[in-house]
Length: 369
Image 1 (cartoon, one colour):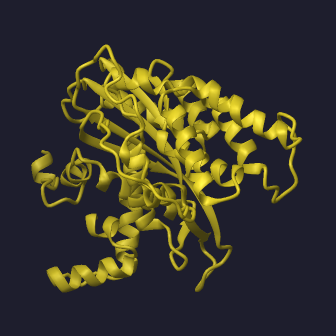
Image 2 (cartoon, one colour):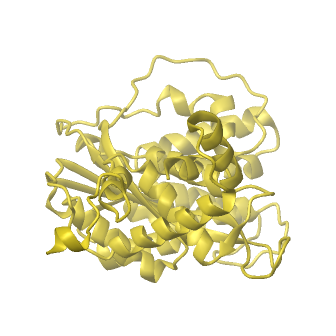
């Protein structure tokens, strides 16, 4: 099952099994078995208890985000029918090593990693400004170290995914942690899940996503690259220091100077849209942007493990020539993939106790008597 979860198609899984183990198993057989195990794993998620003894973490971090999967209608014969992109719901549960709390911000100035043009442009997924950025010796905030991660992935909507996340956090004893964090981008469904199920966790807006809005706003704000980069640095420094209200005030003032009223609907393609988007984004998330406080408490301020998880999930299910039957085939492979990526060996543990496993003694009439 790990082979089916790690390779990009059931045909590749069958080929790999034959070439490495000499096991002749058709791609259809691999697909059917993956579907069965994926459905069984989904059913097991409904239990709030863990089969393993779990210790409550010192620092518990929960994140969630959406991904993409290419699906097709099932039972339509050869070929791809009804192809469409669907959103997946994904969550990361991170046990982290504790760090000391301190009285002063350990990293009050924007670190060098967010002052490198090429790196910031890559984060923002936009062209790099043609601007000079002299390196400076600034401290780096690393935050707590990741010890163990488990994850979930599903086709369900956020109303169903929230309870799934709560059950996983309960199994991992996250609600008993001394320090609890819920970190995410600004998508409303993420924070609806926080409000409904994790309101006792400290809410933090992922700083990486904030950088994307800042870079796009600077691009729209200024006319040349040198000025744009200087504007980005000024905005990013304010954001890093938790001055969300100041950010919003500056953005609204620039919009007003351009004749755009707060909340005004702009025509498609408006050059002012990135400024309006940034103003709305930071206004809506201001209460989750007290980054100096989070650093003093030794908490993470980026959702890097969550971003890595999305890439790992998408590696198995996202591709122009990759299609999963909607909904059962897609749900099964997401369950299998997330179980394989979880670092508590849950997939191995389940396969060892699954009926039909070589580790399970088969019941006969004689042994049952």
